[in-house]
Length: 164
Image (cartoon, rainbow, N blue to C red; front, top):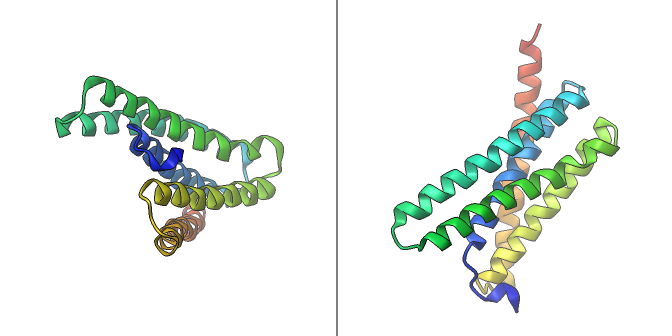
């Protein structure tokens, strides 16, 4: 099966996707309390592109400093990290184009939760985990997402109370 074979760059792709899911869900929850859909959209777009580039650069340096990867492997990981981050950002941004803010928040968060579970499934398949370890990993990723949702919501409420 495809997921059971080792593919170089998968680490960067999964890193980028996890990072983008957590970031975008946090941004959409934290900024949605302002009630300004355009501000949320722009924040996610700008932060998502900057995050994609930053993740790719950081992963590039990380792979390079390990001293065990070829130039091709380093650049493959760099590109896949960028694409994984950007793809997840775009997927979670799309609902803001078509729905009102409340509907977009609900849809993006739901998609984010689904993607976290899917990512846990894919990673566990790559690692040949049994069913129990797979469910544990998926639950771990889900809990990470829920913690971000809760923290981002209360930070958004706190920040909105600071603005005059």
